[in-house]
Image 1 (tube, rainbow, N blue to C red):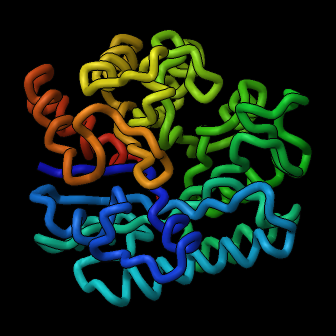
Image 2: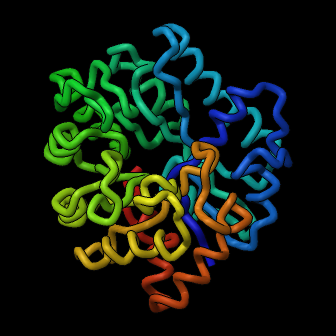
Length: 308
């Protein structure tokens, strides 16, 4: 069985806590040990996340430092990890290898210089979120009070991402920015978002947004954030599956996947405290859906959307 997880924040944790043991620190939800000990075939997306409170130059340094950790710690120290920069890299993976995709969660670090998108591309980034929950020079996030959409610079950025043939991440955008990206982006994906109807949180997607993703042949990575999963915050695996089922009910059989947000969350779904507990989710999926649909949800749908 194979898993494609569209979002984790291991790089941020390693950057924030220098000297942390990336291999076996129990504080980590996606430690190298947990990934390497898994019985699943794995492709894991590793996000670069830069806190909004940093200054402009500090943001760029933080982003580049996390990218350096990806190359020097994840890839160089552990030979089972393969940097995925194209679909051909996936097709060339050997048994036991772990695919690693580098992503950027928010473009604040660019400070309006969208030419740096190409620089980040050359450093291996293949998915770009325009902003986090805040607003910036490109777009407004889900919690930004001014509630604007893409700026003219944001539109330029999306068009540059189209040219680079990489994903534009819809997660964290507010509704206006979401619809602007759906209009402009050739390759939009929501790496870690749930269904607003089931859990009315501004980070989640409304029915029309889910339908737009399906019609665009996009992706929605159901995320394990308890606050985005169950309104009462006591989320269980069955609540997670309800979001999968809801996207399926809106025609999303080929557009639903998983994006855990491990190491970006402090609270976890019951019995799923880290990557080592993924079997609770896979077992529940196997009980609910056909083998073909389970394979799509866990792995194939996201792989099919790789255009880089």
